[in-house]
Length: 272
Image (tube, one colour):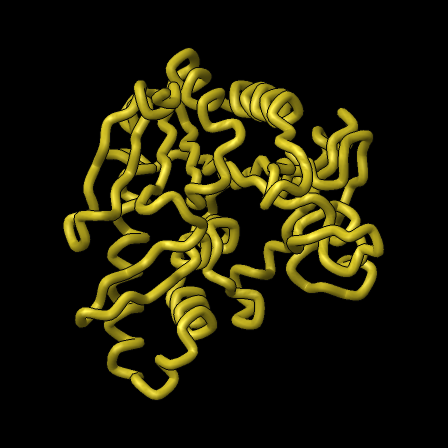
């Protein structure tokens, strides 16, 4: 059965590598000042709901697709090179992600450079599709994570949790400046760049993390993510993150993520 997001979308093929494409729902040139993006194809718990809301409320929703996996496989010089698509929005992030996921490239600097350029072209293709003729004020990212986090003493896996962010903040992590622990599961959280959004989320009982704006200027915090890129370029950024089933572990928190999407739209419409 085809997903609603697929039924409602049109496909744009990445010209430099035709097995990579974007599913696009909505219109990036309408009068709405927001664009939703799903970078990881296997994190799709609420994508159908987002597609439905975009059709109802306007704006655009872009899903990056290739083989259904988290990573994108770049084809460069007849070699397959992996990259995390949420690490491709800055040069430092692209190089770091490619080097980490493809350790043999350490001895092939020319190939690494070509792969970074290929990834840059893909990031530009995504950003152009999100932006249309007039870039939006707000990027909204859709993500899903695993139950708990590794080392939590509860057999958790993955690395995203409001409890982990609290620990990171307490230990002096420089990429965030505030964490609000609300009434929801630790894996259902927002990660934002705007203080007003953070305050609203905190007041309404949501788990939320506020990114430090200094990441825009600190090379040690440049991981190439869309949140860092947004900070560099002055965009408002909201990540809507919720738990999903991972290898039979955990649950899809669809109902919660749908409510989070609704709350996000309430914030967007206040400033539209």
